[in-house]
Length: 363
Ligand code: GTP
View 1 (cartoon, rainbow, N blue to C red):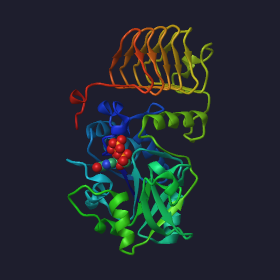
View 2 (view 1 turned 120 degrees about the vertical axis):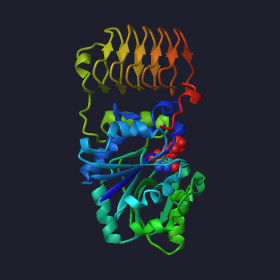
View 3 (view 1 turned 45 degrees about the vertical axis):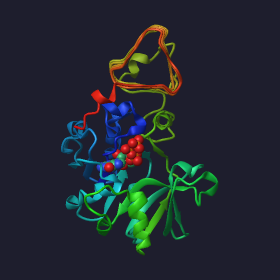
View 4 (view 1 turned 90 degrees about the vertical axis):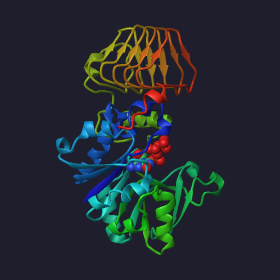
């Protein structure tokens, strides 16, 4: 069994983080997101993975190589121009040998892939789509189906009061090889907007597999922070103990200002007068000075925070230096290697990053 993980998107909604790190390499609890996804595939018995990439692919190749370190085989296919979520599949056709999973590269879920496979085999359609019920489907692609699961329509981002269903496309598909015939080669094709509607219009069968699993698309800063909160609280199972975790947690044990849950990588230095938590992740080599306050935030590697600075509900990328007595407002996102001046105040929702012109390599 093969899986294709779509990792070619530019991740515009996560900018400025994605100016320096492609979305699949953005860390979740200090490990690249894609590593979490590959772990799930491995647990489901899948060892053969194809990665259609395009945006900053070298960072992905450098980390995962041929996959042998993970006891997997990884094949990379690099797109010169983005081919879209179906075009990317067509472009890897020569590597696909049979029925295959497709995973959006930015979905964190507890979905049981083997259970989905059993359902697909029972139904016998051309494809099975994982759906999740949500309170407000207006920002998503709704999928309409009958009681047997047979899909009849796709409705993209409907106004909330006109949504035909609250079940949305959750970005995991199990497809038969024959579906590739429905995708034109050599151009950008969207699987959700073009291929799936075309398949059902042609009378082919697609089935909905609706579950109540944990599910979140980490492609936006608010969701990225929410995913961390959910992992830290245990509502998204990720085989981590609750409380104070990670290789750096020993350095925080007994610290008077620590409020778990907190996950800390190695080599973190936290002043005894600092106050951290709850819901904080510290990357490798972070240092927090005297009277620093960090709450509900994710700091990547080597973030240095000067005395008296407050950080709340923020994401801070690797190598950032924050001067003393700064205020980082809720919802702020700070890109790689940025320096925040002493006393600087970032309003809520600020995005501060390296200039895209100097930090948008495609390799
Ligand atoms: P935004 O720019 O923030 O919308 O993010 P994105 O570019 O990643 O787009 P989106 O979240 O809609 O993509 C869903 C999944 O498909 C992600 O895992 C993307 O990496 C992937 N993806 C999107 N477009 C392409 C593409 O043209 N080629 C490939 N190979 N993957 C893609």
